Length: 308
Image: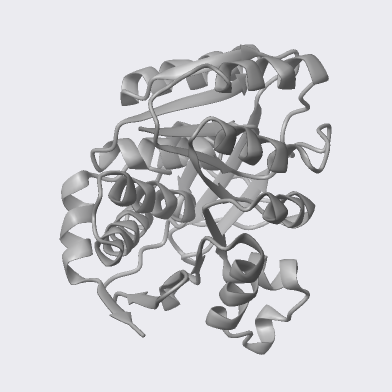
């Protein structure tokens, strides 16, 4: 069982347009609306590839009601805390003419002290052992060490804990020793004060993070693939096929696929293949986490994972 903890859920809207430029008026050729935010995208992706999942989220207003409805349709069991603040909306505009994606993301909705305590009570209930996954940016209204506290809570209940976030919350959470840290190369470089544009080596970044957590560290790098390290090995996963022009949610789909493989006991290299397959399948179609299991599996078969 994988429990996805959503502290920054959203309604994710993708507009497909023939062309797009600042200051113009454009009519979308298609519109995709899904229950989003990184944790819920990852939950949906893990469910698509066959994992047993649940989500725990703080949701408010009519946007929160939409998220509830969408996750029910996707078959993702959901437990919620009712929030005062309206759940945010994030918008992406994909231009066919330029191939570019323009993204407008609201800041995570505010969470009160009482709402946060209610979330922790939900998480603290006895449950099936497995993984907790906490992903997404942390709302500015909560203490910077809250993520670390959730990691420790999970460990106290016998859960493995994975995190995928950035900034101060990530830095504070490392001392709680999450079992898996998944970040992109830019987030890893920011964490460690390195320059991603100067070609900071992903393996070096991952080893520095692992020196604190002692757990697995995975760094994704877009079309360049991903790398992973643990206490005995390091891996690189690459794929040379089509990349796709809808990357929103691909990192989340990667995490969902990775945890799905690990949770069902796959060898780690196969879990990395499934993760890359899910991420790539996601980018081939608009909408986060709406790919098919067959597409992810077909791509995963062609992903090359080298060890050493």
